[in-house]
Image (cartoon, rainbow, N blue to C red; front, top):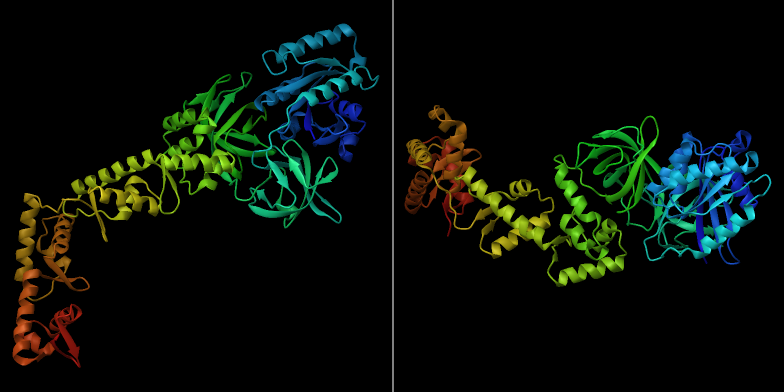
Length: 634
């Protein structure tokens, strides 16, 4: 069964609603305010029979400039347009603005309808027709059929119906193999049914029995009932105007612009990279960081636009941009959008999204980002998985994540990923993150380079902690860092230790100047005798040497076991500690046991110091302690 969405477009009071009523017998204006003011305010929907089995829905959009965002929401799902111009007024401002929207949304088919022909003579209608043809020259409407009609006299209505029917029957049905998405344009409640939302399914299929997710709300819902053109169905397809009776959602949490999709497919985003074309008739140049109104699907959101490949975009030019949104939306790669200026509210341009999940980093290299967007813009689907893995702004954890960022069907993604894995082009690391082999090779070199730079900067430390290394090369996933270090270790390039990473064959080395400082420190602490010293004792003893240089040498001596920590923050030199141990063993061989008060006399130190050193030997398995005495371990 074929379902086609037809949209009206044109200036306010040019007879769009009257035309829809003349074609179907149903008035699309449903609100009392619309009838009182004789002006369309919200989207209207009427059904147009194509054949016994096929039917089209006509979306009637408002023409007033104040409701242009509603017009964009309605035009988003249109496959064919009835481009309406009144014979008594001709081309007007919203005629042009609606036409710009249709071009930006890439509408491919349409019929030009000149209405109100009963109000003027044929010569004037001919002039209006010439103006319209001049406007649409070079567009999808160039060569489109033109019909002169009057909803008052009925002139041209029957032949227009026939042409609409023929064009609808000649249109190819939308493919159903995409992923289900349905932007919401109507929300209401029905007594006895509860929450109902409506929209046009723009891709994929959805069964009544399958759950859906309300986005960007991120809430799963159950479908109680599905209706297409007022008929209950068990499954809906791309191109169908559908009403969803939902359970587990509160209407107060929802608004026009939200979407329905399969669970866990789309993620809310507030940073999107795109290609933007500025209309030739735009009044002003688009400047970097300008505030704009972004329209996608049925939503409107305020945003800042960051220009990437040039400082400004002039009318008639295009460029690569980043949108920083003021509230989250959901979007797909290659999805079309429209941009309006913040004030005055005018349509100024549009284009396609290229990267819906752009990374909002502090350091944005704008031209590099533009080069990446240029590279992926025309990437064929067969190469998209590899390209996205290679350039992904965020780590991709599995095939489902790849489906989300490529917007390809899961079966296609799974098959491409398996091929790339089999060929060694991509790899899966421990946490299932998919990494390109080129990325891994680049990160290996960067890690090795970071370790070498660390050695140059800190020749006395040599061992770089994993956290320092991860920060230096900007690796956020521990599993990715572990994979890189494992490969570098297998290649013999580094040694991975508990305290960090060390380049193979490199040992701490003192410069001639540092060696002099080391010798002086060692001599000083040896002269301290058996009295443990603190770091501050050394800095006080060498006031002319900076604390930083002393700290580097001190750490070197400590890591090379020339200094030993006895208690928290107190140390003894290795040779002094060996002498203390020797004296302890001599006493124990002669006396069997020793107390702190006795060891005090042996070393010539205070009782507390003697107890601290005895406790150190007990902690390190030299002695055992019993009731305040120490004896040798058997």
